[in-house]
Image (cartoon, rainbow, N blue to C red; front, side):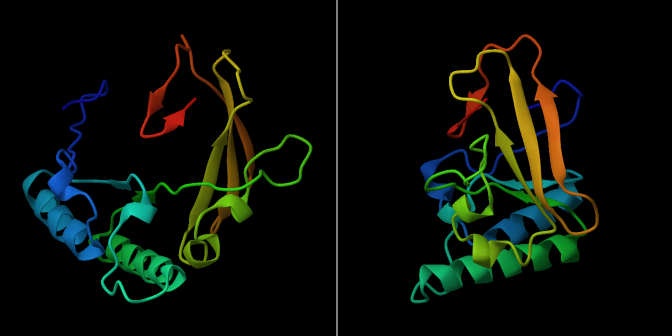
Length: 163
C-alpha cells in the first residue's frame, strides 16, 4: 500500500495468525524489512495485545518487560517505535476532562521507557474536526497541548480510534 506522500506502508498483521506477536517477532520482521524494504518506522497498534516472553509474570511485569524490549529494539534498529495503548477509567480531574497518564493501561510500567507520551483528545460528539494533541511527557523537550484540525472532517476512524 502507498500513502498520499508516495511512501510505502507495510502491515504485518493482515491475518489473525499474526496477532499476539512478541517483541522478538516484531524485531525479526523489522530487521528483514529494514534491509529489504528500507523500513523507517514501526507502529504497534496496541501494546496490550502483545505476547510477553514469560506469560507467568504478572501483567504489570509483562508491560514493563515489553516496554523495555521495545525501547531496546528502537535503539538497536535506530528507528522510532510508536506504541498505541488503551486508556481506561475516568479522565483526569481537570476542567476539560482530557486524558492523562493515570488512564494509560500499564502507565507506570510503560512511562519510564517512553521518550514521548501523547494523547489525542476531542470533545464528545464534536463534528468540527477539531482535536488536541496533548504531549504529556517529552524526555528531550517541552510538554503541552497542540490544536489539531482535520480538514474536510468526515469522521476518521480505525483501530478503535475515532477523531
